[in-house]
Amino acid sequence: MNWLRRQINNPQQRWAEFKLGLVIFAAGALLIILGSHYWIWFQLPGLLCLTVGIVVAAKGYLGMLLFRLTVAIKPHRARKNDDDKDK
Image 1 (cartoon, rainbow, N blue to C red):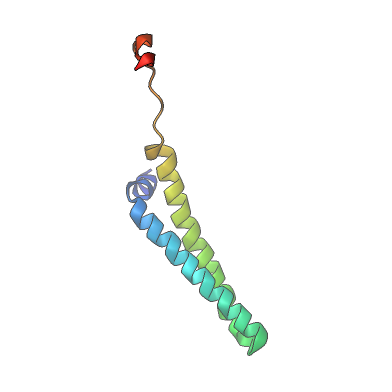
Image 2: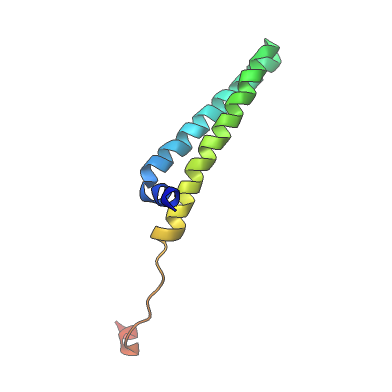
């Protein structure tokens, strides 16, 4: 439960993790492309970068999603008086 609260309480850090994961993923994709054109051994670190990038980005995305589902979405409250509709 404490892990869940840490994920929810800091959405800016989760956004930063998501962006970091995307950068790592893009670097891995670039290494795979370079490996297909120049030297095949670039592809192994590229696959490792892809995997790490996916994990980091997924962790950041999960934290942002949990924040949205628990904190940002508040239930609509029913009005006390129906006469307020005209206002």
